[in-house]
Length: 102
Image 1 (tube, rainbow, N blue to C red):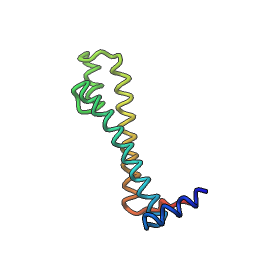
Image 2 (cartoon, helix red, strand yellow):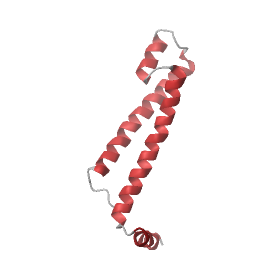
Image 3 (cartoon, one colour):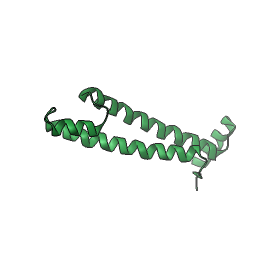
Image 4 (cartoon, rainbow, N blue to C red):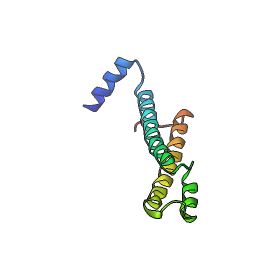
């Protein structure tokens, strides 16, 4: 059933399934990066700092209350690290590394 659908997509787009898969995966990963970037921008706007390390410093200096700021530091760090990994995956696709379907 899925194979029939993929063949139909190949025909309609005039592209091989491996290229369709790579482009789709790249678009999906890029969308996830953009989602994370929006959340990071909201934290930047909320605290007026460019990164989670700066927010951590503000908390330690008592410039920002610890709650909920510590939770936001943790979230921000996770989003940042997730984006790093997502960018690495996109780069692998762009560099032509094998990403085909088995």
